[in-house]
Image (cartoon, rainbow, N blue to C red; front, side, top):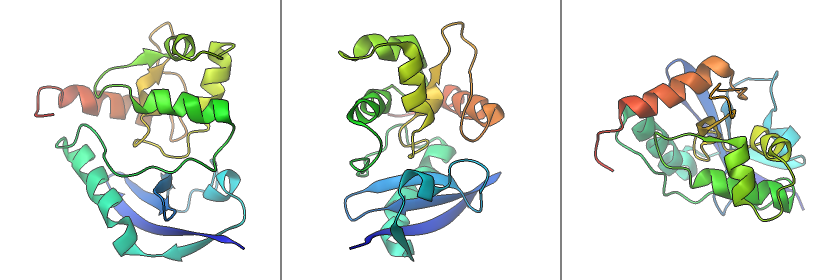
Length: 172
């Protein structure tokens, strides 16, 4: 049986985001039509996509609120149960709890995980994050305070970090 993922798009300048969700929660955030970097099927092969704006509406609303600076924490369900390895999922759970407007290094994440063998293993897990922004891997930077790479590009990572810093004194 092929699992169904529901999807929709939302344009928040300068991008049009592509979001998918299982019946349990958000599974993927990427860019519409982006074939160059990790399309959804590289994360989740053999899924059937069904366009359903109603099912994706809560996720899209929270993403819009995030970019407007009125949302500091997402509270919609996220489903990465079928993603990656157990270590990768645990790494992303730690990343998901990084506070809004703050950054941590890959090494910081590694030291918070009981079985992390290296910052490099953590960096690999973070790079594979299928749920951008909702699992805020843009908040994970290099130990020398350089931003490092990001699936949507280094400029976008800097933009997200700066966006959060500019809204730090709002309501939480």
